[in-house]
Length: 144
Image (tube, rainbow, N blue to C red; front, side):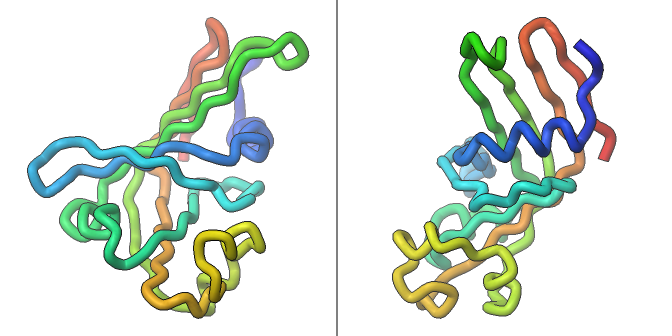
């Protein structure tokens, strides 16, 4: 298999809705939780997620902005072996509704019924520093 590019991985990530966002807790442990990529399909190194201000995730990021993201797809006969992606990056907490609107999708209304005006909403922007992938016997790192 030829080495993957950022565009190739972006195309693959389009079909993977949920990943795991990992942070370091106050006690130094690793905490992970599922997060939707919200339909961000033109991945260029930044990921966007929404949560509530009082979520443990927010406190973890305020203490330590280094985070990890993982995405995986299952193997099947049509696409071959599964794809696994690990991203290391820095998180930024955004509380600006205009920026929310740039990344908002209708599906988010299920969790945030007042849309971008839902009280306590925070957007997490993760800027990737390192991206590693595995697909069958192939693996590599994408320069960012």
